[in-house]
Image (cartoon, rainbow, N blue to C red; front, side, top):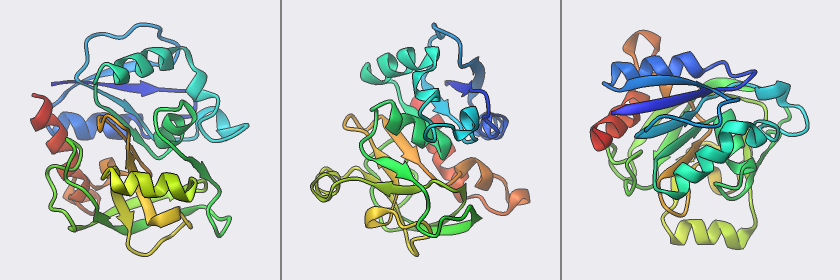
Length: 219
């Protein structure tokens, strides 16, 4: 299984997710934001960080980086794409996921573990969990409040595209949404960091389930 991790100026979790995927059994390719072509990949990852200093809006500039045209093309062709934290923001800005991420309700940066409910197992990202399972993953964001219109939220729920929900909403996200699937179910935007909970030495392994699920499904 071959995974590509894209680094943008300001990414700071690209090595973390590369290490986590490699530990799960993936062959990892490191890619630069200025690339216009990519090798054959089974998975594309947009990591966390603060691309371009979060100027304009979080992820707004990165969503228009040269590499994103190919990411959008691959996603439309069915290649799985995972966006974590800032990567989620980039996916929303690029139009691959509905809604937007705005400043946390408390207008403060939040960095701590949170409990999540697995809202669906109907994706390669969540197939390793049980529906309704409670997992713990860390968050680290200032702009993680997920917003979209009420009718769109209802549509996400009806289509079983809410992947994870916060138990105690830390940032004011509508419907306690922590992770969202695209219409083809091959794109996931997730604010919490699974790569930071993939090794018992770093405080937890709940995120490792997601990474291993991906590697097993795509190998």
